[in-house]
Image 1 (cartoon, rainbow, N blue to C red):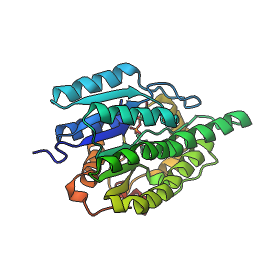
Image 2 (cartoon, helix red, strand yellow):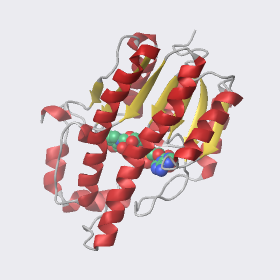
Image 3 (spheres, rainbow, N blue to C red):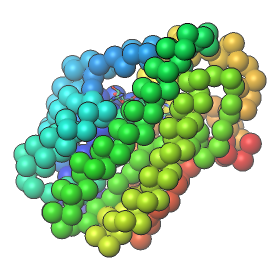
Length: 277
Ligand SMILES: NC(=O)c1ccc[n+]([C@@H]2O[C@H](COP(=O)([O-])OP(=O)(O)OC[C@H]3O[C@@H](n4cnc5c(N)ncnc54)[C@H](O)[C@@H]3O)[C@@H](O)[C@H]2O)c1
């Protein structure tokens, strides 16, 4: 018997990276999956985003595990679209919703610091809209369905070590990212308190660097070269520069399965000790 056998999980940012890894592992552990992704560029974010074929291939991999899957291309900034995706997905998969992974996020890093005020405003707004309001939209869409299904449930926000500390660098992308992730800690605590009476638990994982499309691109390489001090500040204390996708997935699985049944309101770093630097 899998650790989340018979449950239904709603996952944003599922087409690739951490969301995809979580979707596949939860399916292996017996869950049916509602997989959401925008699969579109997120201007002014400069690195490439996944295309719809990546969401389709995820669906095929989940079906090959003998689990049901519902996919929808939707942007977490569009609350009505996320609400419709959650309703349609839950209906298609039998009426229950047990697990929500609010995972979609961006870091609008650029090699050269933007000086055009319009670009700076766009970086700030896009980052906060996706990383913070997108999570709130996901919570708003999913909690009524979880309450209606009456099985309690578990929500996990994918935060970051930048949600628990700062590494300022006169860098609008890092400032906006840090602010967006700090805001999620407040959202987490209020949501955990408000819905505990429905046996809905709300926690967050705070990864250090994970090698995904968010950081594994040419802009990031040039940015890191230009800001060597930042690399020192942001490094881990355990002897590894990065953690693996599976390390984050394992923490998520712990929080959403019975192993975490009395854990709520927790901000769990998976950071190779980075927060102790
Ligand atoms: N990679 C890291 O080093 C790292 C470290 C700490 C935290 N995080 C956080 O992990 C989460 C997942 O990122 P990842 O590392 O898997 O990166 P990723 O870029 O590989 O995946 C992010 C996914 O989110 C989707 N997405 C982006 N904007 C969206 C939107 N508006 N609506 C719907 N989907 C959208 C993308 O299409 C993509 O599939 C993010 O919240 C990120 O902030 C990443």
